[in-house]
Image 1 (cartoon, helix red, strand yellow):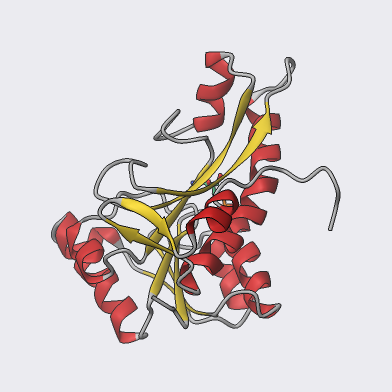
Image 2 (image 1 turned 180 degrees about the vertical axis):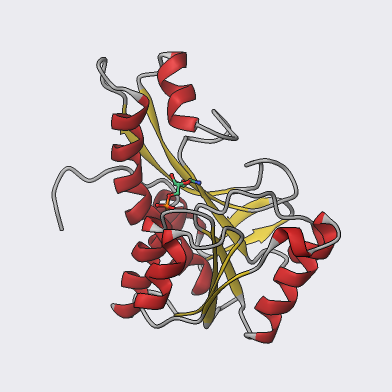
Length: 219
Ligand code: GRF
């Protein structure tokens, strides 16, 4: 597929949204055409407004059921002619109505090297487990909790004196590189969801690109 209009779902601070907006302004990503939040007044919504991107809060309590909320999200995205959906710190499971309408077109960023440490507080889980390496993952979204097909990952070393906060901050820096890059690959049709796996258009070269590691040099 190729995508020309991106929708972003948010709940919180919105630093990943900012990274996507910057990539779009640079011409590395298609237009961010709509931002939807499930949390009223979150910082991500004001970032979208500052960037003059249509943005609105969709109240989960106004929907009679989880399905109805997903249908409302899908309807808004459909009306805005969105063809790629990025979950950027969207703290809510998305369900069938949205996943069916946007099959293979919903991406999420998660702050661990999945399948390790799915769910909440992934950096805290990594520090508690004593792992030496963690990182972040961009994956296609399925109905599970952080279980969809992996598209790209960035590794982040865990220091002996890391706290949840210090590790989360270094992972977040990599999220800001990884998410725009992975979204661009999907938008350009270089990688797509096929039979539950991320399939690359030109396997040998692109498969190497599927694993992103922190660069030691700075761009
Ligand atoms: C990120 O760590 C993301 O991976 C996780 O929630 C955090 C959101 O940060 N799902 P932000 O709202 O993009 O600043």
